[in-house]
Image (tube, rainbow, N blue to C red; front, side):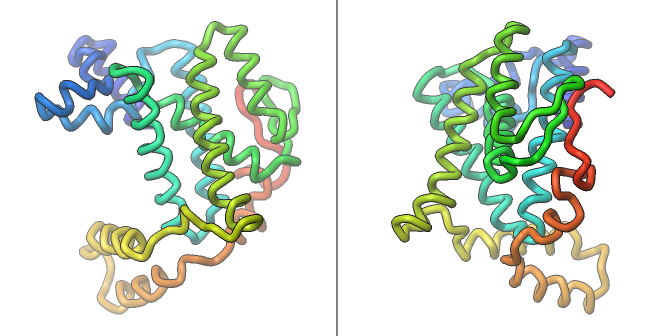
Length: 240
């Protein structure tokens, strides 16, 4: 969220050209403008009502999915990697110049709503079930002039993830998106690298053991945050 707000400030102040945030495969490959692969996920446009909605969506969708995974940090970051690569691939096939921010966030929204279909989400004063909220948000976007393609593309990627992780393993015995060992080790390495100077040696060793066992169910989410961070009261987006 901070990067979205910061990039909006930079473009509003005309310090940075908005096009420099957009993914352009030709410039990425031939001009080595490698930052575009990151900024295409962190730029959501200038200050507007649309930016406000995207910031609320980022806070709600990504935060709740992260809490849903609980201690399975490796699986959460593997989902992030899958969503990023899927968005980049889809963007390459359909358009050479694009942003992935909204598609990325709608992917997380769809996944959360599929995992919590009976949860209550309050949107501008109206309560909706999680199973119907993705389509409510799509209708709202149509009314306010938003991009339906961005929403449907994000939902498609989210549905693919749910199929590969929930349906395919249970019904056909194939777990194509099981988090690989090398990725778990990479996440552990990054975690240790970032905090190695902030923790005593004994604590670091305990954390290494803990990281090897981060495959517990998301019990933390289920017990403390049944429907997000509001402890079962229902999740509110927009309004008071």
